[in-house]
Length: 231
Image (cartoon, rainbow, N blue to C red; front, side, top):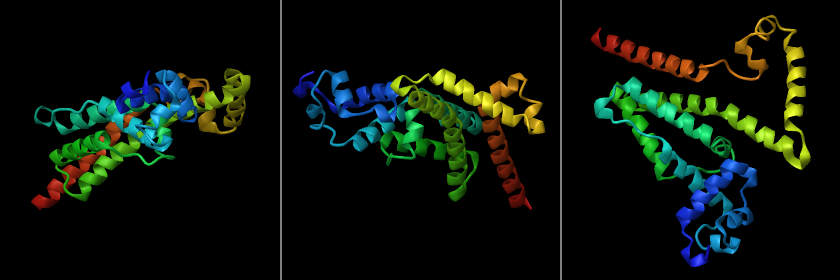
């Protein structure tokens, strides 16, 4: 692709695809230029550094999260929709969760999401810093829930480098971890159940369970606050 037809948006979209395929460690201007059919130097005319590229790519994917109409949706349904959308986005792009710990991430799409989630919690009845804390509690839970798949993918890639057999190494490690777990009574009685999932994964529907538990707690705070105001 000639330099004069290359756009920043094309570069960012290609970077997202490369990050999805190779992770943060696989992103470099040479690989990106090859994917774009352009010389790496052409990219620098639009985006100066890898850090800037990660920031732009990391912000762009927040546009994938659909934001509910607050006029026709109750607050719990709205929080569930945005949280589920965020979780799905992080699962599609596991490198973003890792990037939170290594890059400065900001931009209009992320701010749009944050502003909307604050509006949802204000509609619920939270005011000022309470709205900030309620929105942050949901955000941190969703981010934490998505880190497991991201870490697993990153580990598999690392173990597969230089011809490594990631599947065998993971199986051997899990066998050793299982033997250690058998020393502890509550773990031992779960190891042979479906919920244990090989002592490697959270039980099914853990994300949904945790999210609804948080919303139950937030709703209880709203009810308690309303009762206190009436007294």
